[in-house]
Length: 187
Image (tube, rainbow, N blue to C red; front, side):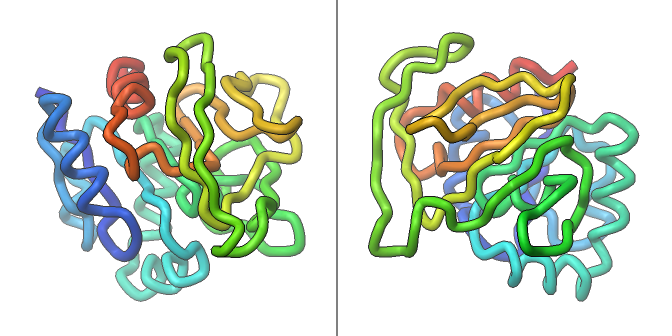
């Protein structure tokens, strides 16, 4: 059974935990450094990236998570989690700076501009529901980053080795195929 942490400082924590448990994983809520021990992977959920950064600093988790990413721990960042992982942020300083992507925050507008679409993602499946809430997108990706999905010409799902970044919220749907893809890709 894979033991996967979910950063549990702020954001869509319960939804990720529930989905991971339904996939047969042991889900661990990560709130302090000792919660990072013996994980097979880590999910950085959607939420508010600025708030999450402050809480990462306050709980002294930023550096330990960065070190785990640099050592190869599989990580999946959704929305704010993608923002946290990005090497470069447009008009802002990066946080973890572990994924070779440049991200623009709130590129789909404000909260009132939220929407849901169905995506065909060749490596994952057809008609996958994607919920966009103040979603970022990836402006550019490094040469070794694999683009998995785009929407309206914007990169919204990409993989950089052991790191998976997603602009939208798959955990806010009942479709677990993207999280299943992440779990299955963990070596």
